[in-house]
Length: 244
Length: 244
DNA sequence: CGGAGGCTTGAGGTTTATCAAATGTGGTGG
DNA sequence: CCACCACATTTGATAAACCTCAAGCCTCCG
Image 1 (cartoon, chains in turn brown, yellow, cyan, blue):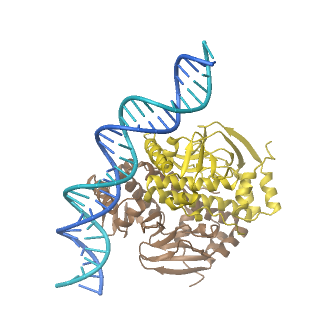
Image 2 (tube, rainbow over the protein chains, first blue to last red):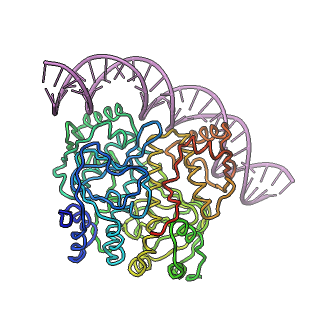
Image 3 (tube, rainbow over the protein chains, first blue to last red):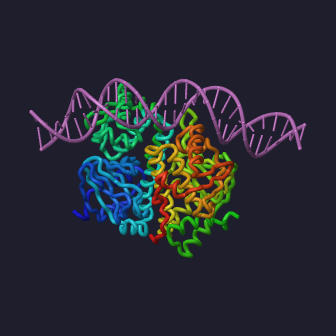
């Protein structure tokens, strides 16, 4: 179990952006990967720690969390199956943020020595993995734009558009619907709002017939209008396939 | 002039994080680099374009700009000498943001073919360049935390702390003072505020004796108190030197 | 069936935006 | 050198967005 492991979500995410040779896929499959599961709420990587391996999500949703001295927190990214959550830990020694499980999780861990060796022996594969990291950066830029210049309502709408496309990529969403076992209070920490305001803003989107969001699921009722309202431009997700 | 060019700021920024061999420095120096200058306000890279080269700043300050449909804009990053502004354009085909000159600029451009070749032949050098890109991502996370959970005043204070350390790195700042020919309205677009509020918030920092900011210069009068007020933790700038 | 946590709603307060106008600053042509 | 212009900074007044506190309800789970 420590070596051969089904990392299909990662492969799918990579192949959506680039072409991988059989040899490259074999290198990835070989790993070695270490499987690990977490309960909702668990701390996966601690802020300030110096990890020696990085993890890919197979199931569940994580958040990157920056904590302030008064205990409040900001979630700077959400991650879904296929995402390389902390690839950057390979190059940035000390974690500038923590990683927390927002739902029950399954993750696959790979050592930094292995990743370094991939960069030495398989330059194209390493560039493709780096591409995921750069997409991650583009998503962060989109969040900055939402936080700085969009209304709370547009920001929530934008987040749902983004999450749907990212989840659909690996099959975790379809028909404009996806499982979403994350509390409004957690979303508040991602959007820089209070949980009360997230609730009101969600009701606004519901009232306009754009989404439903109940229990542990979200459905987008009118994709085109949601996209238009959020001014959502998917360019930053880099969904076009091209050999690099 | 197209080949041999003084890219000292980049080398300094890299060597602050890692050790470069003479061979690696020679590869970097060889480029080929293409020198280019811009006036303040010039568009350096257009949002939506597909550049075939990336640029390093030798002099001046640029901003990454995301424009909204109503003409408002959010600046998602500021860049200073030594920064590889759009290294990610190598891996992300279409620019999700524009790059604009906020002051008069001198830049050095290197082709993506060259960078790709570096990743094939000089894996460690490529990882070191990628490290700059990952630091860039960490800075974006810090901005997200500031936008989402800090007061406008703390956000401005945090920005000055960040900029001072980044400028000091390549010698563009010293003695807690640096040239800063950027308008309050531009800073407003970076902090997600109105220019009126930036002005009020700046006066607050002045009133507390933490900074001066006049004409085209900033001086930090009390670094320790400014850091404490902003809850500034420089971990995200990855200023510790270590061989990777 | 009881408790805990998440969701919803209301009231009142704070932060920040917007609009408008006055003042300061640097550059340019006469 | 001065008059003038464009643009940046500053100040004031009002409005909108969002927060905090508080309470009630709902859902899930033991």
